[in-house]
Image: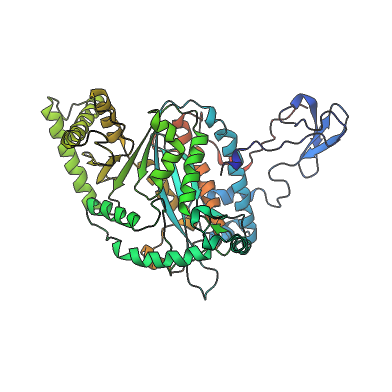
Length: 524
């Protein structure tokens, strides 16, 4: 997962007897001199020690139509299906898929050059939103009309919107037949999952068992439009029905496993996702997680940040949101919240029409504190009075019209300072940053758009724009994440990277397409 952050091996003098043989041009520019270019445009270098010349290929070396790379990039992130990209760019399907592979490599190289520094960046405070999103992959055989459903965990910074990671539960490097053979030889099918050689992967035996369990839990699935309390209870019932509380997904008979590559159990993807965040953000001084109420999310977060919870520099909250409300219902909820805020301001001697943003924020925190105080005062327990207790958020928004928040890291601090701190965090709790990114994925990546049919029926429906290769899901998400972080400007005219403080301006798409990690070269 973090492999793309590794510093790539550089190019050095090919003469094994030369002292510069293992001294890369990028890290040691004084040892070499530029010596023109090859016919294909690659840079040629001269070793100052032995006089040997060698060439270093550029990112587009070997491309017959390198000028089309930028066009394909622009079309891909602007809701254009593959067939239309072929038509507009006058390219074959093979060429377009090849250019998507190239763009994927370039995006990872561009991001790695910058995100490699995050582990040493002393972020003062990070408020991180984590959620998951499902994607559909079409079947390749008409006789087996079952789609593949992949899930990606994502985490974004609440303030800047910067998406630190998107982690699909798929490994494209593995061969299913080879893994099944190895699993049979190792006796994996007879072992409990934690003791298997291939515990993280979906085997055929896992799929068969999952179909049976899915039938038992189907009755617990809810309907759209029901109350948020009922939705929370049903999620808890679904989790309790599973053998392992950290298991985040069940596959039913309408779904299939990928024919190419291997699907990874979602809980392993979640653990890898949060462990990667711990590696990437180890320089952060305080981290607050706002988590969707998914099975395995809390356990994965605690596994990666357990010492932060213990030492009080990391906190985690569940955030439950009613996402299926109509526009009219959202407007009604927002109007009620506005009225509630005006009443709270008036009760504290403030004019709602003249109150400053600071005064409004203080009143919101005060109202939230009153709700938290009521729970702690009513609890007969001496310890963990707030642990997993759901608190109604008094001031929802159009994006989150009904919201409840639960503290997962209650360490029994209930004095005035602790309650003020908790009220501030409860008030800020939101999944808006990652949900907005998910929305843009649906709207701007035609390959990953939301199925028109309901989710359960969609599993047996062929989707015209969905990919056939599961690996395309991860590639498109990587490309879009890099474009979104460094190129996509919000209403404030800034990119997420600028708001986070890691960029001085918007990156041009050309900067990504033609990024060369070996660009730092000696002078002529």
